[in-house]
Length: 75
Length: 376
Image (tube, rainbow over all chains, first blue to last red; front, side, top):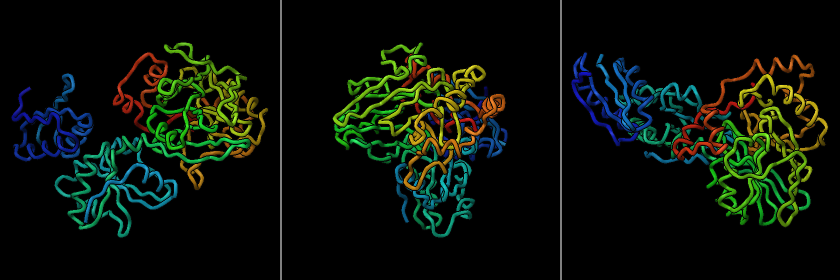
């Protein structure tokens, strides 16, 4: 999947993956896609919940070994 | 203004002593809806941390004037982060829960139940975050445990404080809602692990069968533990009677409810056993026995000192599950009021049989969430 920006949040503990992803998201334009990689297990439920609450859309979600991957489309 | 850690034990004391506490739970809505810290004078609000990154004003608006405020999240990080934001925004003090809901879920609060005639004493460990109860029975410098949880470090620390060696571990049944600590403790202390044989047909390790009528006497005070077969929650479910004073009912009889017969998959078959245990076997016992179950469902079951205990005869007056004499009606009540099954109950049973060996992080994950062992 095409992404506008890839953000690596691997190794960061909650709440940092969301805090930093939000900062990246703020820099993007509507329709852009942020690809986020995280290893914190809490990200699995928190990233989709955050996306929903902020009006953005998870267009794809994947997991490779311990790495959770999200493609988030900016509203 | 400052941000300080509050330990799970301090929160437990507030729950037991019915103290006031205002909780800002910053986990996501689903996690909060699933389970949260509750108490008679505990107020909580839920604002996921990711909604508070730009501004904490929504929370500030709801804060009480003169009450301690505790910020809670899953593991600690987010609660500390938000507590700092709140402190900065208001200039006031805030607490965060040390170790988060994970630690809360695992905290055991020990309370003394009483001394035994002829020497010895009994302690109850209240796991507030999950509703599990486990017990340590002391006989001089020797101890026994009933339904110990996997959180063996906490028992070992307590035993060390008492100066005793815990050598006899009894499980009332093969648990489906939490991982047993019986086998692990026995391995660590060189003690014995007793399990009802009918629940142990598939276990992969050595155990001592707790057969109906079996009596074990231990320690300098000669405390006796007697097994009494009371099936129904599982086919093997066994109660233990200590010094003809305390009756450990496991998941068959609780203070305010009764056990459920379906967690090993056979509700229809076992409901008859459950009824016989409740309406015949316990009824034929000494009604002055003090009932000590493996769970509580509601906080009102705790007395002012945090103990969960009731006289058997009184339960025949008060417990709604013991008022249904008609067999068909009982069958309907038990099979039609089953709450959702506990998280990961199949995996937990496999673990307790020794068939799988999850690491401690996986074990924590398996046990997260509310307890659901009773018919509600």
